[in-house]
Every structure is written in structure tokens, then in C-alpha cells.
Length: 228
Length: 228
Image 1: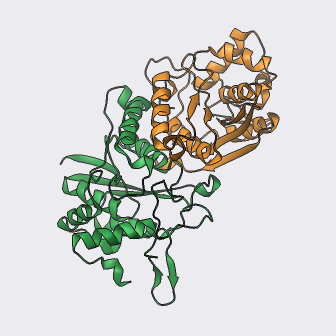
Image 2: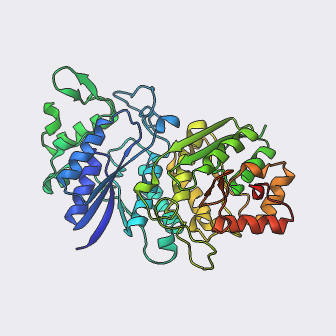
Image 3: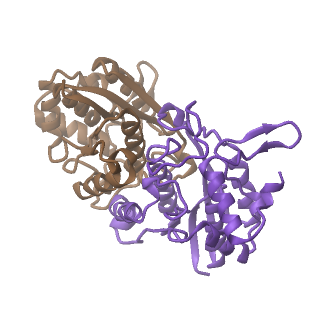
């Protein structure tokens, strides 16, 4: 037994793969998800399914309402952009989202006595969100070790682990498939479309859909979600 | 007009003083409080009264449940220690609390387009919480400027301002009184006692009460709350 880890689990492709990686390394997984009034709440159901599939030790869902803060297409009525071709950070950016998520992860990790926090941040096939970059994650880890009783008293050191950071989406998918992950359990679309027959379907055009589609194509495998 | 500032407002003596200082510097105040299932929820009523008294532009209360995470006397059934004489960090420490609070403050500040975030951290008459020390606050500020779209794109720089950091409790109280702050509006006790006649009373023995009592004594003034 290598120990325990807190894993941020959104229900998306990346975080599910990270959870599978942590499990393959021998960690007992404490999965953490957030019900933050996101537009694509279906990802929370995916998070639950992935957590069950990976047989996590505990799955905690923390609820708060980021619509109170706004400033993002994912937590307001701002439209989710489609077929975006822009080098700037898009409006789907949620102010300080990973910072908020990591802060709850840090709190839970400290309460559990766990040093390792896994996050599915990726800085290759991504939307340019600043809180997915290595310089941010390093600064977060540094702050975390000054913030907490457990670190300051020398009982543990917190590590923010982002094993997908430098992988392409295709490499992430291949890695997950190697580990036996069932990607039909995951959800990526920011703007799910209601259809009469099968419930919600991915829009296929938002950044998140496009990275997923491109990734499966480049990996040369079928997306099990594409049949929906 | 110097601009706008987000101020973390717990309803305690320190954060109320910080809000009064920010106001005296000419800031329009966006006060942020948290309903995190704290044992001493009465502080939220104090936060509302202080926000009204200081005529803040907006007072946002964000709700989440830190009992889900635990690990503290303030969010669980662990008893609040009385008359503590210890050099170690006490069980009233809440894992990563200021990190969580500052992260919501950062999100709101970014959504508002505000660079200045005020916090009532104090590293003199305090319980030794690691997330009240200058090295922590500096690391947080550094991380915040790597985390956010507004900072990375050069639109603003975030500053974590802790004007009480090096003041004694007596100095804090004198400063607040100079600025006309009414300390009867504030609340400090971690473990409010139910009394038949006047509702809740401070216990007078927890760390937070003791720092307050000592502070008013050293400042040579009466605590308007002590009549309760």
C-alpha cells in the first residue's frame, strides 16, 4: 500500500484518467467533486459513476453557488462559445476555480492526514486557463505548505500532482484505456443539448467537446459517448 | 475615489477593523462572509451588522458545509479548549480555512475587476494559525497572480492586504475606535453560551475571548460586549 490520495474528480475525461492513474499507482482514493451550480451539472452524475467504477474509498461532493460570483459562461447566462478560434482565454474560464477546488482538497487532505492531491490539469490540449499551468500548480503547492498546520508542524508535506500536465489528449485517452477506464462514464461537454429520445447529448462544438473529439480521433479509437 | 476592495468580513473584531480601515482609505467595500456551518454562527449576524454600519456596496455570504471535512473544534463536536496555555496550534484551527476564504475572495475580486483583497490576519495576539502569517500571505498573493486570467493577461495585479498583521490586539482596538467603529456590533467568542435572559453570551475563556479581553484591557477601554 502506497497510501491515500485526494483526487479532484469533475466527471470529465481528464480527472477520470487521473483517478485511474492514482489507483494504478496503489493509492486509496478520496474523490472530491463540487456542485457549484455549473451549467453542465450532468458532469456530477459522471463523477459519481466514475467514483463507483474505480471503487474509491470515499466520494465527497461539496456544494456552493458560484453563480453568486459569476464572471463565467459556465456559471451564468453568458453563451458558451462554439467553434472558437482564439488565442485568448475564453469566457468559459471560471474565476479562480481550480484555486477554490484545490483549497477544499487541501482542507480535506489535511483533515484526513493525506499529503497527495491529484488534479487533472493539462497544459497541452486545453483552453489556456491560467490555473492549469505548471507555474500555477507549483505556486499553489508552495502556498499549501505554508498554509497548513500539518505542514508547518512537519507532520506532512503536501504535493499537488498533475500527471496529465504535459500529455496530449490522445495520450491521456490511451493511458486511460490501458488502465481499463470506461470513457462512456465520463462527460466533457460544457453545453449539453436536450434531445427527445436519449436525454442530454454533447453539443460537439464547445472547446471541451472539440478537444475530446480531436483526442479520440488522434488516438484512433471510438469515443463511446459518440453513440449517444 | 481610490477604488473598490473585497474585504473578508467574519464579524469578528479584527475583520471589522480591517473593513473600517479600508473604508477610511476611501475604498468602496465588497464584503465577503461565509456560512460554513461554524459553531459560532452568531458571527454571521455580526458580519451583517458591521456591513450595514460601514455602508458597504455589497455583502455576499457564500454557503458551504465544512462539517463535511471536519478536523476542527469549530466545525465538529470536538470541544473548544478553555484557558489554553500551549505553544502548539490549537484544535480551533480549521484546515485551510483562510485559503478557502481567500480563494472565494480572489474569484469575486476577479469577477468584479478589483485588485485589492483585505483580510484581518494578525500574527501578534493570535492562536498561531499558520494561515495568518506573512510568509503564507505572500505565497498566496504570488499564487493568485499566476492563477487568474485578469492577472495573467496583465489587466490587474492582485494584492492581499493585511493591515493588522503586526499590531497587538490593543493597537487594533485603538485604531478601530479612532475610526469610529462600534465594537458592540462584533463577535469574537468561539463557544457562545446560551443564557436565559439575554440570548447568547461570550464564554470568556476560549482563545478568541481571551485575546479580546486582554486587548480591551491593554487599550484601557471597556468592551461594549462585556455588558451582555
